[in-house]
Each structure stands twice: as C-alpha cells, then as structure tokens.
Amino acid sequence: MWENVVYTKAQAKFKFQQIEAEPENCAPRQVKAPFDQLREIMMDEKKTFLVDEMKKINSYAFDLHMGLTLYHVLNEEYGFNERLAAQDEMWRYLSLEVFPDLVYERFGMNDQRFYKGTRRIWLKSIWWYIHLSWQGTEEETFDTLKGNSADEILQLLDRSGSGGYRVELTRKMMRQFKVHASSKVPQLFRRVLKLNTARLNMIEPSLVEGGIETYVTDLYKYFLKDF
Image 1 (spheres, rainbow, N blue to C red):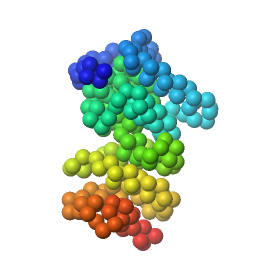
Image 2: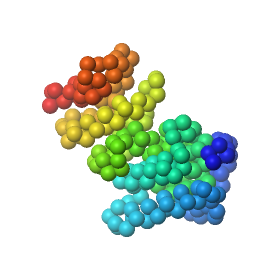
Image 3: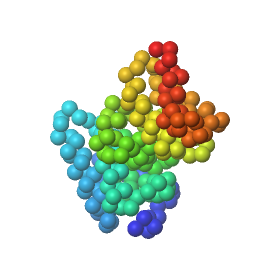
Image 4: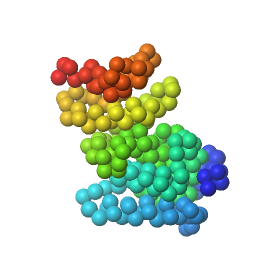
C-alpha cells in the first residue's frame, strides 16, 4: 500500500497551487482506497470535536484530538511505523490528496503546513508529537498532554538531536513535564530540551546511575532547584 505512494515535492507544489486558486472548494472529490476510509474516520472525528461549540479548529486541543486519532488509525489499520513517518512523501500525499480541506481549515494556505516544511507539515507534526509522547494508552497520553500548548509541539519536534529522536527519553521527559508544568519556571520545557541537547554530547542517558528516569529527573531539577 504505502510503497505505491509516489508524491514528489514538485507534484506537491503543483497540487498546492491548484488548491490556492480555489481554497474554499479544496475538498477532494474522490480519495483512492484505502485512504478513503482514513479520511472518513478523521472527518467524523473533526465533527465530534466541534460538537462542543466552545472548541475551535484553530487550537492546540484540536491538534491533540486529531493527532491521537491519526496515530491510532495509521498504526493499527494502515501498518504505519517510524520508517514511513520519516518520509515526507507520505505526509505530502495525505496533506494534499486526502486532507487538503482539513489542513486548510487549520492553517489556511500555509505551504509549510501542507508540504514544504519538513517539521512543519501539520499531519506529520501531530503524528510525531503523539509518538514521542506516548504513555502506553490513548487515555494516559491524552492526560499527559492535555495541559500543553502548540509551543510544546514545536519545541519537541525541533530538537531531535544529532542522533535523531530518542523515543524512550522524550516520553519520560513529557511525563515529568506534566508533573512540573505548573511550576513558576518560565518556558520550562524549552529549557529542559535545550539542556538535554547539550548534555547528550557528553552523556549517554541509559548509562547514568538510575537510568533514563534519573537522567530526566536531573534535567528538571537543574531548573527547579531555585524555585
């Protein structure tokens, strides 16, 4: 299935220009199987989210809701994995051929969010945000992330480190951030991520006495000790 997805950046640019000419009518007339089912599920979730009139598409809450749904369905029903998630080609196809209207409703005609920005493609960013923050179940993950903001998404995705994302490490960092998010330290998560990037040049977290859990605890203690 995924091996048949061929969608170059040039194709994406051309499709984006077509959408740009008439954005209000960019919903796809027909989506190829099996992605038609994915679209149906995601669009139903959008409707479910908006039943509460206080909730808005232009929000972190929408990103979290749709991210959890996308992560679950792609992984469970479409055999998705990290290798596929690292390929922008897949996300360009989903953004422009399956969900152009959804991306447009969330971000307008922002080419970075459709196909151009490697870490800014919206669907890609919410999948990786959930993956790097996963706590074992959707319920636990939602509970861990519900108090965050769009800034946490950007900070987490922008600091992969020279060796790429360390999934076990980021999940523990996010779990502890929930505990300390109410502290008075300004921009705590951003500071912890920057400190982590610096320390990874010298320290292997898994070799620290007490393991990754202790390593992450020490990252937060560095900033919390004075508050």
